[in-house]
Length: 227
Image (cartoon, rainbow, N blue to C red; front, side, top):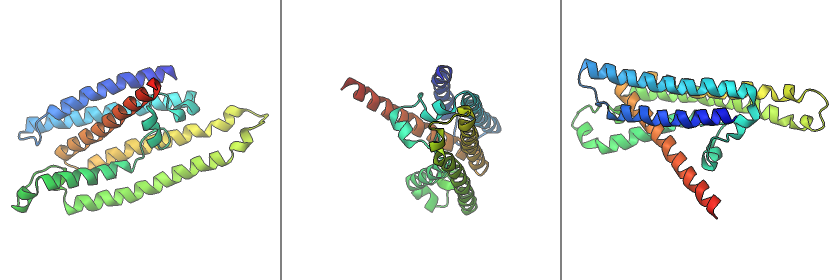
């Protein structure tokens, strides 16, 4: 598990580098080259997330209990976890929040009929499709949660178990992989509903939320250790 923790540290540094590139790219893109460049950066960031879940899946196969304990995360991050990671429906709350913030900041331009092209300029069709996707994701979340609950209900069988305990723990690997698959798939499907400009803003906002929570968590853990 130490190897995955080391991977996470390197991966997080690379994430900051990719987000800085995305943040520095012209938005909205005003030329075909700028649009292509922004799209490539979005794809690179998504590939970076996909690599994280690929390596995490391999680590879960070796030690699912340690993955659930998430030793690479801060106490604050762990308190917010749903099956060793962020809850997929968080993506929709982020879309709505960012859309509201940006709409309010550009309300004068929007009322004059100007198009900002950012997350504050989502169309009724986009909102409808995001809402539909949210409903689908909630159902999948609930199904995976129920699967984990069923495993936890049988935890008493682990006590004094004479059989192969690894066989009892094995189903956790499937639960973790399903949760991570839903996380990655949700982001991909959200991005499909957005323009390239909006997709870039969404990924930046998601990363900034992740950076902020980690920073607060590190400060809290440092203060707790110093007491």
